[in-house]
Amino acid sequence: METRKFVSPKKGTAVVMVGTVKGAFLLNSDASRERWEVSGPHFPGRVVYSMAYDGRDGRQRVWASSTHFAFGTLLHSTEDFGRTWTNPESAPVKFPDEAGQSLKQIWQIAIGSDGEPGKMYCGVEPAALFESNDAGESWSLVQGLFDHPHRPQWQPGGGGLCLHTILVDPSNPKRLHVAISTGGVYRSDDGGISWQARNKGVSAEFLPDKYPEFGQCVHKVDRHPSRPDRLFLQNHGGLFRSDDAGDTWSAIANGVPSDFGFPMAVHPHNPDTAYIFPLETEMRCSPEGKLRVYRTRDAGNSWEPLATGFPDEPSYETVLRDGLDTDTLKPAGIYLGTRSGKVYGSHDEGETWSLIMQGVPAITCVKAAAV
Amino acid sequence: MAIRCYIPGPLREHADNRSEVEIDTAGGTLQEVLAGLWRKYPGLRDRVVTEQGEVRQHVNIFIDEENMRDCGGFAAKVKPGATITIVPAVSGG
Image 1 (cartoon, rainbow over the protein chains, first blue to last red):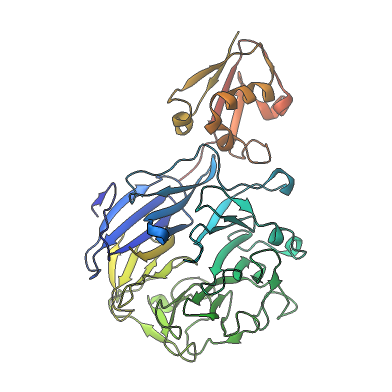
Image 2: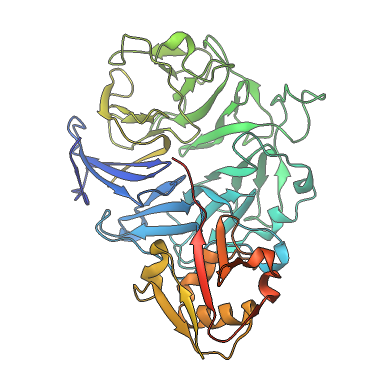
């Protein structure tokens, strides 16, 4: 794999941001998405759990978190696709003294809606939400969620007590969803001042009460921008859909080889279409060693395996919660990154797949954008 | 007499790329010496201590040859002419 220091995307091309346990890579291809240029590793030796692209207000800004095993977690950005990165003197995202907590990881960087070009969010471990109103220049703890009476009862999952999902409603900037492992889904309708658990119908098989108000180990939630009340959820056991912004959830694990998995990615243009990567529950790898993405095109009433282009030989692969994403080109590109350091891509909405990159460290996140 | 502070490789970009810096102080507690180091090189602070003011779990600070965790922590006395060494813990693959 030939890599360079930075990529130089032209307008209308795809950028894929890949975070790994030992650095990050930036990939770029024209709209055909058949040949890719790769830059990196950026932040070599550091864990990059989260990346995001901010194309609002004329920006071309890539964000990344980096965690050094000894020296902590920082937030960086680049305006030139990796040629130079910010390296802030002081940690931009940190708990205030009175919170009594210390930042471990930034699990999610979320860009606000187009109507609020300065708005950004970070979801962190220990579970908390930070917001910025100046496009990432300064950050503050969202106190309303931090003070939630449920917070002392949230429990860490295998990956830690993390706020890993942030969903901005493009039609209503006051509405925000977050998901916490293990805490479940919470929604705010007042811009983050107050929060309500929104888990009715989502199971928690590991608890005595199988349908608690909160405490579910939600792995990932995604929403469609054109139909923001529709949410798809990959649970720690179970697939669910909500058509009422999380007020109620319905099970949609219809015809999947396993209802366990981590990622969930909604098609960028069709609110009935979503993608998952089922995992066998004990081994936490692709069932029967068959590398498959599953797609629904009828909002979860049925799922189909997408196999063309994936290896025929046994592939016991794991894809983490942020390891599956779509770009916004037409037809949509779909990307997944594995813990064995491979990135697969589809330039035709999942019909066919090809290996874009391999031989990189274990992949923690794959985020795609059209620039 | 100045206190010498040794800076580990990954942090030197925040200390004018120097491996060794001097803090002009007649001594005092480790807390006071480090406060002088943070004033001189603010980029070091958040990388060495958490926002709660604790030394990060995998960072060790030695006063001469003694780990600060074994000799009083931030309250440990630093004598004039002493050496402060900041080192990350060893790690695996």
